Image (cartoon, rainbow, N blue to C red):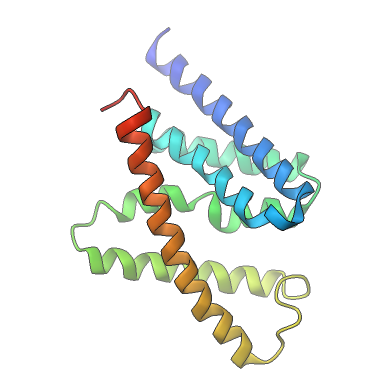
Length: 168
């Protein structure tokens, strides 16, 4: 099989796995955010195995199919507005040499995404927290959880590259 055919096939397979994860996330409310984050791992797999462009293709295809297929639109939009494109940005950001700058840019991306999601879904997402102090507290806690997520995500990527992938 030639390389382009392999990459397209892998992109399609990983996109379908991502959509399956999003579909299950929409049916399982207690695992919604976790399984939406898992769906992003398939974008990461495409980046590692086939390159950044195929990661972008996987994100676009998964997003499009999620809007069409996934019953809970909030799950699809969480993927589209943050989890799905984050592996793409993460791979670009981590090419910078300065670790502090990497963290600052990642936190900026998270905070902008959080604010957009909160503004778009304020009636669903964080509706109980109409006082700004609570939203700021949630944003602060969200930043801490995001940093833990990013650290864990990096460890999963390391594990995949060094233990599973044949592309060393």
